[in-house]
Length: 161
Image (cartoon, rainbow, N blue to C red; front, top):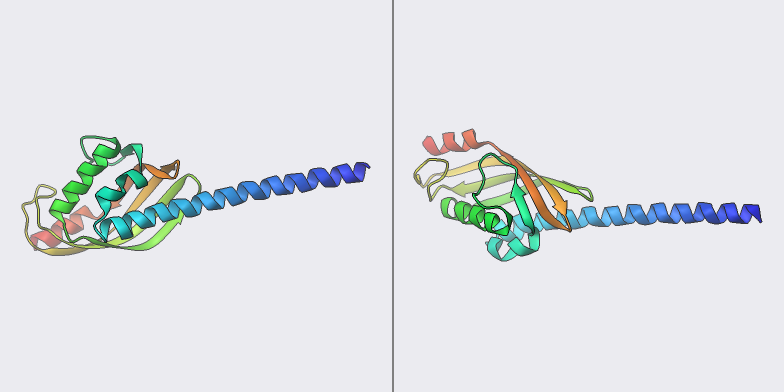
């Protein structure tokens, strides 16, 4: 009888551990899909504004020094409008995408044309290429907070040439 109880306890523990791992993997895959959709459908197919409520948490905030005045969804709408006006043809290629149940990270390559004022520079009409990395804090399957590192000096140098 004790062997049966011990076996039952072991099997229950294994099942619970397996269920937790499965849930964590599902959350990680869902987080990766959220990020993929944001770049491939949002930026590359011009669906950003439509996707903001689906992809971003209502309390989203940007952890970068250069950020929109507002936070939440309105802040993301501001950011999208800024980039769409400055770089209307921006196209992203995801080169690396990682996620777990709580965080996601992406490395991308971007090509765009400088058509609107950005970073203190008047429009130049010049094309540039660059790379960047963004880390995301995910909450309820949406982007809750983001931090971006991009080669701003490299972009500015290309636009000045």
